[in-house]
Image (tube, rainbow, N blue to C red):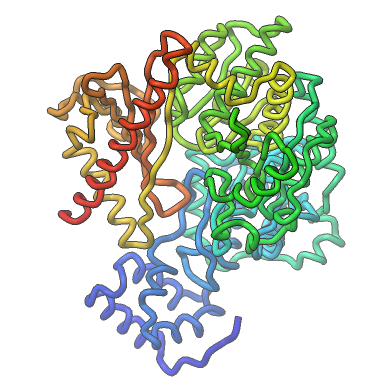
Length: 615
């Protein structure tokens, strides 16, 4: 770090910062975190730059850098990178994360030694941050297994299990913009850390003073850091390939890793099992943390825009399917041609329903499905999967909070031998027991097998989705969100959650709200009275689920509301259902539901804006 020469003392700097709080240029929380960095010896190397920022009165930047101690959310610690700050990803917060993980593991286990696995994706600084994390874990006495090259998140989860590790860490910010990075912490199961471990780790992070560290190259020479690569990755791909359920391979398509690591996992698995008609979309294959050839440089396969470059090529080459994985290749997006020859982007709910139906049908056909087998989904994932699962004669477990770590936890609690499939609406899919996190590779394998089988019957994934709607009812789901950045945004999210709880909307568009299930207070309240009608015991989390009915329509709608655990957003999930008595009625049902939901979404956003203006 370039060391400026500030002309003020730490006392003068704190006086300036305190005055900025009084003038509402700096939040109180930012001041408290800033004070630690200005006065405590473990932050000495950052203090000249910090004093200079205060002298320059860069309080807007300082609030961004310090408004919180970046927490462990649903996907670990993730956020904006900067050279310093408690609220951002930087060398210190990465070192603190690794230290917190090691210190908590040793305290919890009573052991002074152990084993850890570390991997990183292709993001800016991912390699550097991974080396820092490894150096800290090794200094704590753990033997570290370190992937030499960029790898996917499921490969890290696999490595933790395969190598018998006690903990693991993945350096990634998933599908976030180039400005971001993060630290995902894993436990010995191969799943991301869960309560109480997550809070235990963050407590150790906050207590961190001087952090032990060893030289990375020296540790490699001494064997405390052991380099791994294809020896483990090859075993991972073999385990994914073992979950093939079909020999159908005639399919023409494109795969894009969106400048991430998906070619090492998704594409190689597809090639290994014989999908020779799936080709790489070369303009987005280079591993590059700036994501230069992805529209808006936002590599999120949930966005329609990311597929446009690949669609242009696919339309010229006759491809029938487009697959996209996010930068750390744990999520998979799918586009497929409709009957008119246009590419349609499937949602995670639609892909999850298709894959659940596929594997349940295959296991039923070979006689391996029993009533004890189960499918797992989160509370914001489509009810269509529950209907499909029950129809197949298997169990559905769908009362989980948002986060794939809860699906992993359920696998181990219920017994992995009866686990069929786990999925969440944000493009996450998993089968088998080889890892405990979502995996784009297994999603791609099954999506291609199903598409190839349907092609041989003259059908597409969209045709089969319509067949599921006729059998189980039409389901329309989606998500909208409002971005609220920094300390001010955090307060806006808090205000919105309070408003939804205390003075919830009575009507939006054609929808009238009838009840709300509050997962924080563990109660069901009748609306519009907002009085308690019933209580329940779990799961507990900051989520609200509203139920509504449409006037003069058989349509029923649910609305889920929750703050994001990994992004500065409040998210709104909607789920609409309507029975379909016959195939000929489906088009009309779709059109009616879509019109109702579009009106509802506009009314929802108007209510949000009005609530923020009046609060």
